[in-house]
Image (tube, rainbow, N blue to C red):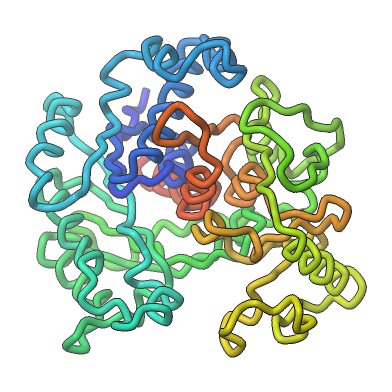
Length: 420
């Protein structure tokens, strides 16, 4: 029997990449994350995996139905699993304490893999365009140095580093490219690195989402990159929407909802659909009457003309933004008749204008569950807030920042092939 490979997830977020690696056959040792709400989500998900392994998913089901509290759920799981989610900022002021926690969990075992990528805002082309200093001098630009410290300490056989494509062009104040500095640093500590720009839409994700996936191999030679297998499910965005109950703005719940019985091959084959546990977080945010009027215009324009709404084409009474030159596509329909949507980003937590539901009768933006399905999170994945009180905003932020689960799974499967 082959030994199960264990990994550490740094800058873990809500666990999209981690979930993909779990589905791909690897075992998480620990997750390190600065955001408290995301840490709670990770604890809940690790509870799910434990309860599934010991055939006690009825407890998790009780939690989703609010028959038990979150703290009661966590008490049904070994403390080691809950404590493996480390709520901390990665950096020199905290790393020693993080190391102690990881060392305790390792218990003299070897760590096989480190995954994760620092927050992307500092490398994002959009982030740079909005920042007065083009993100130069932002301390997040240098989080890769702390990532490298973990590589030096634990020397895993591989690491997987994910980030936005803007990383290739981001430079510091002296005009030096951060990406080049990263690769040189990783080389200096013993890792051969190779990267690809992968589009999640090539791996069964119904979303146009391009990301740099840099993989390092300890003492490796060039030509080792584990190319993930392409999967075209021949599906449309409507396949992630058509079984969910119709909602108007302000309707829905973070708790269980009844889905419609429709044939949906994609939801099953992608692993999104859960037949044992309920769908949660199908909760629509409220909108102003003005926004809903704009949504109707945008949906009509797509349905009848197959054209996107340009903000400047709106009637003057509906134009309240002073900026008329950039972001003119700020109101955008998630078209159900296309094979993939535009990229889901964390801004969805602020408003839903860029993610308008294609059904004019529902006349709203996407719910967290609809966005989570675009990110290929399983339907039984529950997104937590800071307190036990549900937070739709926190759920949206975590979903928008995540790595699509299926992309992570494809990478993990190919890495497992290399190991085995």
